Image (cartoon, rainbow, N blue to C red; front, side, top):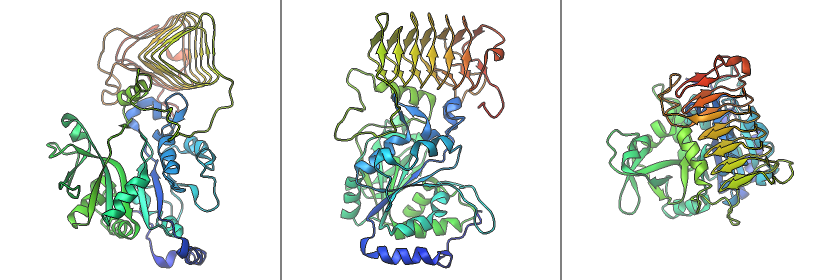
Length: 450
């Protein structure tokens, strides 16, 4: 069990002084974003960085959606709880300027595990991560705390959820979305009365009693959440997880818990298939998820690059082309990130090409995700042949999508099948054959690999 024990006596006298000064202007709500997850189901895409830092949609990182939702909802105090490989995520967020969160009072704060008096402790679960930062919430003087995931793609006005929460005088409000019956067992499922009060919760049940799935958006009265966190911390049998422990505790204690129904676009892009599908949703004729909404902008640091260029040999059909790209070949139904070069006679179909990668001449890239700063040689074909089960990790790589990691080099004339996994930092020397059959893999097995 973690060594850190919350106690009022542990609070620095300066914190107490600031808290008293803020009593008259206590914040109605602050946000805590859980962004420390490894995201192992994304394979090589999240091997070198936290899942919320994975690129998405031609110019964003996944966490941009939650951060933008916060500031668009009027929440100006945000704590981001990081743990797994946080360097890229910390660099991306910085002082929060793109989201107007570079503020003296509030703003964005990175909350990493830290050394206490006796020793440092990793966060042992989502609830433990919040427990270890009770002092941060107390210092803000918050009346309500909204717990968010940093790895979901959606647009949501949290202020409307807060209104719903206050109207019901709820101890906790959980945002829910209707899912297909055959998908319900993947989620935490709520059972509610006709007016939306929650009376039962099952975490990933084998036989779901409803299709109301938790979105991982939890709004609490702070005194209630604080009490639950302290109680959970004292339970040595607990996993210290919101879904497994905190929410069931609320139900067991018959607290006043309400569901907040959400009907917009929401995706947990935690698998290769869901990540690819969500990016492809952006280039449909009528996008399910509109990134061009002027009333709900998604903010991100902008690369300092010129406008993209399409030559007389280049042709683009129904695709997203970001800044700084140079297109000399053909792009169809794909998402192309900043700084990508597509050489003459290359063809990109149904694929995601991440920043500063190069696709050389006469290559055919089909249903493939290519990581950042990767070079695909000339006359390379990817996504060829029939599906075959992965011989590396069939739980992670289980679709027709081929994934090539960042900073890799694919030699000229290589033919790569579908459902192939190629590691980060792969070089020509790592290839023993010019043919990589479907279901195969190339993994380095060191700190650069998966």
